[in-house]
Length: 207
Image (cartoon, rainbow, N blue to C red):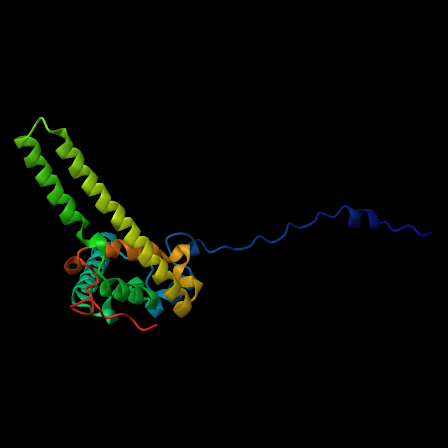
């Protein structure tokens, strides 16, 4: 084995530190990144508008204009411009079916109001005759019972027709077809929205 006098010095030679990455202080904060430069050059704007209040106000105005147009379409009976929910085929069928028949419920509010007025006059004229008020209330609740029976009979027939024509989806819970039918049947014909397509009863929808 030969002795190398330079071996120790080579082992103890200091290791030079790694060259530090040179950073450009000008590329820090306060100056757009290259990607942002490209976006600005292309004219791309951020998704968030500069004036949020003005943007929200314009969106509300557009929504109000659309709602007014849809309400006007329902008043005129224009199916093509009604809300999407009113353009569903089974809802059109429900409206035509309800509008074609005579519904006991559409006269409930006028009848109940008339019974209430008559009951007040009779009670004030004959305060000692309690049976008159009882008779009036019995008459009103009797009419309400007729309305419930009429709605049940209507829905029984209408449900079968809807299933046969449009399937089970038309009478599913999410479709709200039952509530749509009975709520329309208890409204007076002239106040219904959307407006009935025919001026008189008797125009039954096609099966």
